[in-house]
Image (cartoon, rainbow, N blue to C red; front, side, top):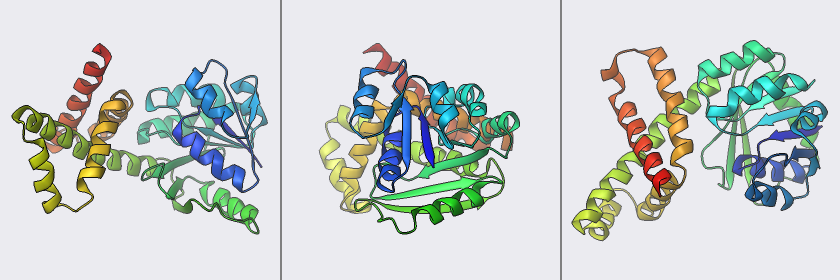
Amino acid sequence: MKFGFIGFGEVSYTLSKILLSYGFDVMTSIEGRSDKTKELVNSIDITVLDSFEDVSSESDILISANSPQSALAVALKYGSLTDGLFLDFNNISPNTAKQIENYISDEHFIDSAIMGRVSSDKLNLYFSGRKAEEFVERMRNYIKGHDAPEDVEVNIKVVSDEIGDVSKLKILRSSYTKGVSALLVETFETAEKLGLDDELWEILALTENRDFETSSKSRISSSKRKSKRKYEELVEVMEFLDGVNKNRKSKIMAIATKDKFEKLKNRKGRK
């Protein structure tokens, strides 16, 4: 079974390493990619083709792991070029997932997600769509007799046969985690201005847990470093929530979170 990746960041890198360890063929292209992406691709033993069109046409399983903003365009451009399955791992809204399904059909499209930290030693993969159960069963049958990767535990769950169900879970998770991140950023911006940030870490660690400071500092750093990507994901969150309920008062936390990440994004852009 041949796996192809459109886009090659942390998600593609992590999945590629696992697929390679199980003996799958993995391919991508560095056409038009940055030096950082080229370095990441060249750090593991995958096949590099001349173009993403070649990757798409030669893949049995084509995976999109880019950004919410480009997910639909990638699906429209490359999704129909594969005779196999197209898996979207971007944090897209259920509406975007349905648009992809309408173009590619549920015969070829599976709504996909990594839930939790991509770099964790436990990787949780979620799938939905009419072909999801069949795909997962094929994977399980294929890897029987192969040793599992030593450094990561892979858990797979099929949510349903409906395209969009995994995207709904992704969006709801994104709304929660980014809301917490935005509150952390804002709280400690104020604490730093008051010169009380060290003391606040100590107090909140008593309230939360011993690892609170380490995990929260990581979350704050990630929020600032990846503010543009997270803002794009929150645009998808708002699209989904607006479809569920138009009343602004029902989603004031989500609105405030989006506004906070927009400010972080703009602040980073001015540096």
